[in-house]
Image 1 (spheres, helix red, strand yellow):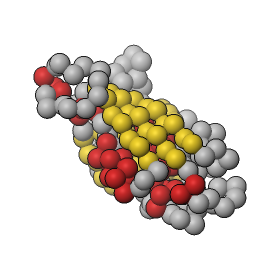
Image 2: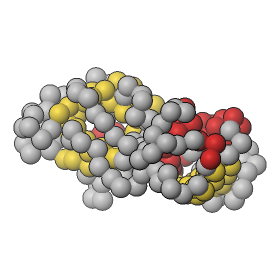
Image 3: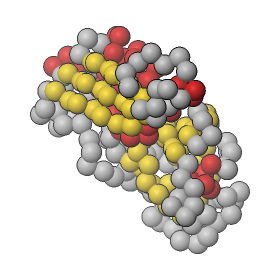
Image 4: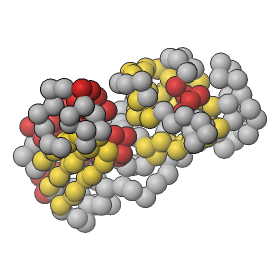
Length: 205
């Protein structure tokens, strides 16, 4: 794939399309959310990932948004070089920048309707696939996944962990879902409760 300047429109070669960064929220100095508007229709199942690229570098990222939402929502953690290649590039990009996007979502980590009890465990960005699943299932009562699904037939136990409370990207949303639906239990915990960055934390550790 040809190297691209981050301000240029990526070159399409059949296997690629583009997407535009439409919104960005920074949670910490190394965690942020971005919303992407695909140039063409982009279908995916809750729990799958998309592959985006900039400056000739591609990486997969789990999708937080529901398939019903008009944009792709990602929750990204900055990984500095030499371990991280794409996230330092993405971190410097602003709203309006175009990225390459593989036209097909991938991943087999999707909702399994044959199981009635689901334990969802994740830390920081690892919670993302579950957010997509819960948004879809709880907001779309007619959702079918390989057969009819009644959301009240399922129980969800969501456990989210982080070192610091400001690393929780979806705790408010998950708490609201748990309060609104009797079949969801949500628990969050921090691993460094005595550090000043966690002042005010009253939850589990």
